[in-house]
Structures are given as structure tokens and as C-alpha cells.
Amino acid sequence: MKIAVYTKSSLTSHPARARLLAALKERGFVTAEISSVGSVPADCSRLLAFGGDGTMLEAAVAAAKAGVPVLGVNLGNLGFLTGFDAEVTPDTLAAALNSDECAERMLLGCETESGVFLALNDVVIKSASTRPVSLELYVDGQFSDAYRSDGVIVATPTGSTAYSLSAGGPVLAPDLAAIAVNPVCPHTLHSRPLVVGADAEIELRLMGGDRAHLVVDGTAAAGLDIASRITVRRARERALFIKTGKDNFYERLLDKMNRWGSAQSAEVTL
Image (tube, rainbow, N blue to C red):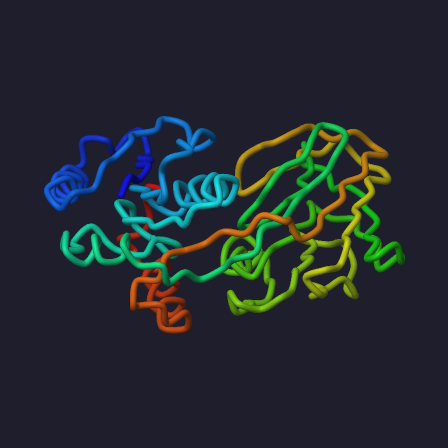
């Protein structure tokens, strides 16, 4: 089996990575190192990522575009999206890569005048300054709310445990067919997170305030002007996460979120 390998640039010399890749080659795997997750070779049937959750966000979207499953080994601190920690044995990693058991995660497609973007976690509109922005929310063409806020987060179930959670949003089970819309620090008492069906079309219109930024999975994607319109809907592509046998979402949620709040996680490598 040939697999693509993507590694966070600062972790290419990590001893666990070297140990696992050498062991995989001994077991007959052919590896293709890629420096950009936008170019998964056509003859690769898996994408193996080394890093933390930031690395996994990039890898999962690239794997979805290529139509291959993805598996991550956590060399950071949190590793909520990765399947294994650095201590995984070569046999366990090889068995997972050979498996066809995958969990499907939805992606969001975001369309603006600047282009089309894919997100595993979230699409965020953020004020470009310290001043709030004014936005209107439409769901399936129907006016749903107006926000004067620091921004708005549109999150998948996967992304509900990321930035949206920090902004007071709900936790959605990863297999739930839904999208969360969460205003960031709204200047009204009535504005609260909204959960809509996965097939809903969400449109956000900038109506006033300063310019804004479009941020996709934590990466700045485009600048937005007043009167910009951003459309978000479930993407055709889907992310396939290779199952590892330790896929208890609620157990991982408690473990990772409690660890995230500890003093030793003050500095995080993603």
C-alpha cells in the first residue's frame, strides 16, 4: 500500500515519526512525503498526518479532495482529531492503515466573491478591527437574525468542540447532521447559537461596521468589504477518518477538554 505522509514542518525530525515510518516501510508500506496538503498523489490510498489538530484540519480537507481516508498521529498536545498518540506501536498503526473502517465527517463549503473554500471545523467572519461588525443571517433564504458582534462562527459537528465551544456554542455529536451558527460576543441579549439542518443554506451579509476577515479552519482566507455576502452549505466532499478502535467521542471529549484546561497545556503545538 502506498500512503501520503504530511508532517508539520517543525516536527519532521521528531523521533516518534522516524520510528513509525521506518517500521511501516519494514512492513511493506510505500510512503510519499508531501510538503503541501493540496497535492496528495493520485496513487496514494491513505493520508497519514503527523502533528496536532491544526495539522489534521489541513490533512483532512486535502484527503477529502483526493477521496482518500486520513489518519493522524498526535505529536502536539491536544490531539482531539488525531487517531493515535506518539506512543502507538507500529503494528497498531499498520493495522489501522490497512483497515477500511472509516468514520465520515461533514465539511462546509463557503462561497464568497474571493473564491470557494472547504472547512472541516468552521467558517468564521471576524471584525478586522476592535470594533464590531453588523451582519444579517439568512437560512434557506429566510431572514433569521441580525447581529452586531465581534463576528459569527458557522461550525460543523466536528468544529463544535473548537472555537465555537470557546464562544459558548453547543457541543454536537460528530455524526449529527447539523450546522451551528454562533455569534461571537453579540451586543444583544436575545442572540444565541442556532442549530440548523445539515442541508440548510446559510447566508451572512455584512451590513455595517468596519471591514472583516473570512477565516476558514483557523486560517485567514480573504478580506471582506461592507455588503459582502458569504454563503455556507454542506460540501459535496466528505472527510473519512480511519477508525482506530478508540473512537468513544464522549470519553475523548472529557479527557481532551480536561487536559486542555491544565497548566501543562498552556503552550500548545498544533
